[in-house]
Amino acid sequence: MGSGFSSFLVTCTTPSPPPATGLGDLPESVVAPVLAHLNPQQICRLAALNRAFRAASSADFVWESKLPENYNSITSRLIDDNDINNNDDKFPSNLCKKDIYARLSRPNSIDGDTKKVWLHKGTGKPCVLISFNGLSITGIDDRRYWSRVSTDESRFRTVAYLQQIWWLEVNGEVEFPFPVGSYSLSFRLQLGRSGKRFGRRVCNCEQIHGWDKKPVRFQLATSDGQEAISECYLTTLGTWNLYRVGSFVVEESKVPLRVKFSMMQIDCTHTKGGVCVDSVLICPE
Image (cartoon, rainbow, N blue to C red):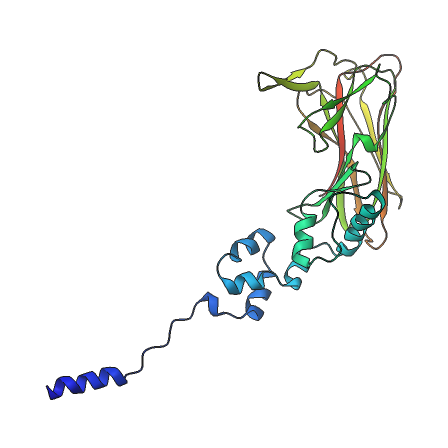
């Protein structure tokens, strides 16, 4: 009995081993610098691990490294547009860096909902989409030539459909604080008018004509003297295509860059028709 009592005392007086440490014990000051080297998708996944990672994932310097270098100019452009146009979905002016990134990652309307801006997931630089309603189009208000078609195939829910015209000219411009980098500009067009029949997508191609006779000429020019010209025939029926105009390079992000662009087929020896004009897309390369 004495030996049993002695072993009991030994058991009671032996200190228990310290609890095992884990990732949850890491301080935020250690976790946050690691997260800053990851992409946004990886940061969000790790934030679900535990409280330490969740708190570190909200640090301003983590998300500031994911934002464009001139994100203040971009957010100011969106806030100023809200004040001018009194948008319902206003861009708040007092967000933390994580919320700024989240807000910029989704489409933000500017210029009376004729343009949308969002951050490209791969590069973190802005994409700008300009609706046909923000362009100057020959005869757009004449129903003999054009009609507006509602569709869920456009971010703007409406596209312009050309029935027939002799002289086609589409012009537009945008001024925006693009970050330093290279960008491409394309027109989003479709030969044919798409719709739905019995719940399935169909495309009416009956009015398509004139695009095989002469190529369409695309142009762009920037306020710092860059230019690009391309020509191509419109041949693909029934699907939306991005017709690339060219690219431009931004070397200074402190001053907004103005980009002018156009699309024309002005050979009046024949008519042309049956094309849908949706938008113009500027995105980082």
